[in-house]
Image 1 (cartoon, rainbow, N blue to C red):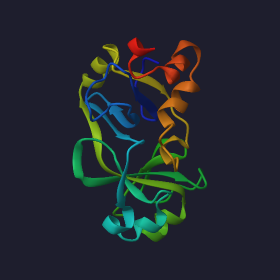
Image 2: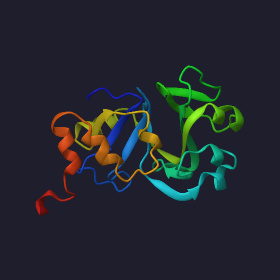
Image 3: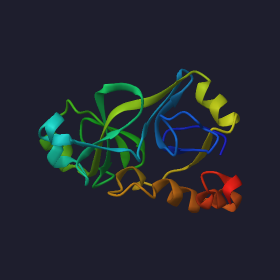
Image 4: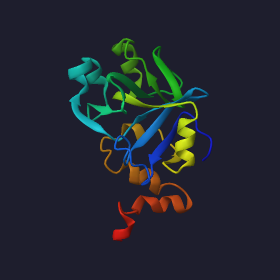
Length: 185
């Protein structure tokens, strides 16, 4: 895939050495001429959503913990939800790709939470300036692949990176079984 857009996944390649993104799977939420924004969907923290955001903890999907969304603005929270009925988006929901979208945490929990099948809350996000992400993709730091609605809401994210790569066509699927250090193979 060459065109970056919201809803796609970025999967860190072995060449990406930044510890913030090693083995990361990032859901892109916004891509435009000014840059890109996404959240790392496979890094749960031990902090309960309810301990930080009260009622939103009841709406959060299992595990009901904050996820480390990225190194930017880690003191803030950003939420991603999946609609129970894709034809009935409540106020406070901005679609990213079909039934998956960004949830406004200032909206009433009773209204938004009732319309969601899944909700994940992220502390921080990943952000790139104009042209920065495109340059990282070009240098081989990221695989850009289609996302599936359930990717951001898996209860157990330990195998997410491998599973996302495994479902890709052609040689990219082989990357799912690549050892951390191919020289030791």
